[in-house]
Image (tube, rainbow, N blue to C red; front, side):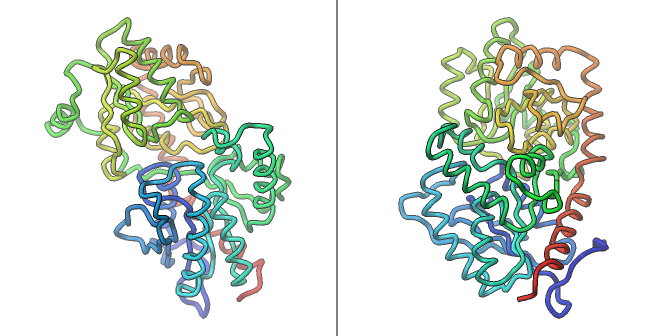
Length: 409
């Protein structure tokens, strides 16, 4: 059923939306999932959607993808802040210019700050309304990825650029309430330009898994020994995601008990963390299956007795929490503002960046029978608060407001 405030394009035709995704879309993680699910929702409402993105990535069958030319020296997925993205973004500008000419969108939807900046240029050149989807702080991400250090000259320059983008990139959508507040308080954005559009989850796809013959066969294929309780993580494997803390917590737990197994799925840096687990003496208690396709994520997560999200970032969203919640798993996370926003009083919170406290919370989640009820409460919370029909409606409302506030082409 269509959203009641669904805007239309020129002459009453379906609304055309150009998504600008300055990333290696699609790559089964984080912001890619948000871009994918937003695009699918818009298509379900009758909108025509094109995603303009980097050269490398997988093409979802149900989306039209326009790709930039590749850079010859970079043939793999680009994750996070990187000097290579400068060249990729320049090529993406050319691809977006061509997409604007071919597709003639009614609305530009720029993802993350680079997409918002490119969207600002396209909006100026083609007099097309812009909506920017900011999933965290630009400089916050750069600090998380050790691309810049707080207080350095580069940090000050990028902080200034972030403010310019925030104040001029059309109507702003954010994936967390925290960042919506920061945009107003720290970057001087008008409150009426900012809309909190939380990440969501398909609770029909991400649902509790039945432990049938196929479930047990999959567990054996993963190499998980019988009789072990499984702690599961699925996401990027990187320092700012807290994987180092997770492995240290796993080592502490495995020193005093032998019935645990840590299923740590995702990419990149798989071999690095597999070697780190071996160095800590827990190689036999860890499985690193690598990249997991998005449509296989429920099956993978369904192997867990407890899910963990030790993410350290103070401003980025944490969409993986929603998948955990929808599966009905008890969730352990560092007690960041963003984690508490998603989980509320149904999460188990460790002191941020404290491996020992993370180990304590994981053990409590595994061994306290009362925490088994948390999984059911988390699933109910996901179904009540984080459904795409409500968040998608907020996006359409933002389009309608931006279309109404800007002269037509």
